[in-house]
Length: 428
Image (tube, rainbow, N blue to C red; front, side):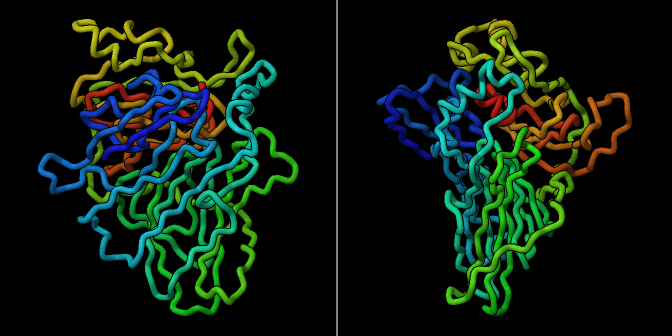
């Protein structure tokens, strides 16, 4: 794939990240400024050039539902984002649906990001309250109409491209069958409602009714638990319709008593990859939010808040010769970990914060071997844990408030793989 970028943003630099694609062998095309590349300056050009086919060109290495977005200081919420679909001629579900549709969820701010960021990362906001979106969107609009035919099955590829808000999603009168998360095929799993954090993706099969007697609403609803304060008059919902007959009414969605999404921890990868049992290297990432001397509130891993490097980390690694495995060369404020190729790596994420946080790892899909309940505290390495024999895999997972995660992956993609949390860490 070749993506030619011309930056016409006036006084802003930019870059593009292809979210979820491993960039195996093409780390320099991953997009994070200060990690794998320098920013594309105003009026500058850059060509992203990479492949996701195996060398024999017979099999697609990473089919599935992805997205692209700017990886520079919150630009993508202003619109520099979009779905990226990699089709698979050998998909195990290719004969189970009649048509494929892309459905994006997002949040929308009436102000652009630069003034919002300045207010957010400020001594005047010592609690670190994130800007609350003004609206939720479906396919970058509201009142979306999706025309369907009776007796058909549709594959909905769903992407949450939000800056901040997770969303619940459900289709009234219809059941979803989950068949993919974050580019990983799953065993089919029925669900009446799903929950997508920012950057998560799902593919679901939806079979329509056998008649055209009515149209049916579907709803995205922003998770208001994420908002420090819910503004008066905020409508957290966005409604679309499965339109069977355009001459019939578009009914209002029914009120629901509670949100009951499926727990993604219980999904099973279709390829049957077993639990990575022998861990070669394990480390903790303890998450907290705290203030620095400037009075602003920042996100921290292990008491360190990330500071973008003047020289991209990849360039440092390529020019330091024998010192490449010395963590000190990568800077004080980077939390560097040096991995050995093909080691099984375990990351323990401890959320020392009362908020929900999505966690994303570049370059890999990880096994989620443990996902604690809320208020479980830090991970207890001495306790006996009942890990699933075939753990769910994805590249974005939510750590619950004051909870923890245990993630495992094989270090088989030599690169500089950043990890980060939600909006606060990206903006930092």
